[in-house]
Length: 82
Image 1 (spheres, rainbow, N blue to C red):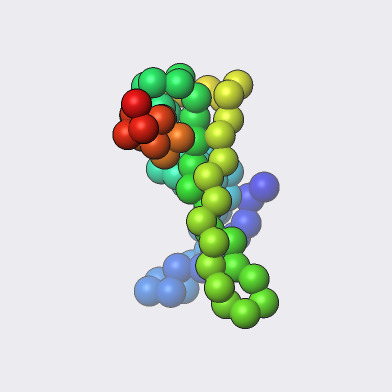
Image 2: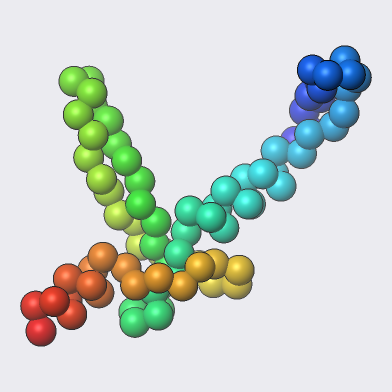
């Protein structure tokens, strides 16, 4: 999907590829856990009363190339208990 985006400084139109930005955002948000070998991300959910809740999502069959390596909260808690 290509959207025409106007540059404010020059007033000209240039193509903007939304898929490229989406891939960069995904690479920054999703991390790889080196202990359980799964990808995970943090998501924040808000309800009607503006109360926020942190949600963790795990992806077990996800490409790991280009992702940051960081221990997931599930493995951190497992190591603290043991």
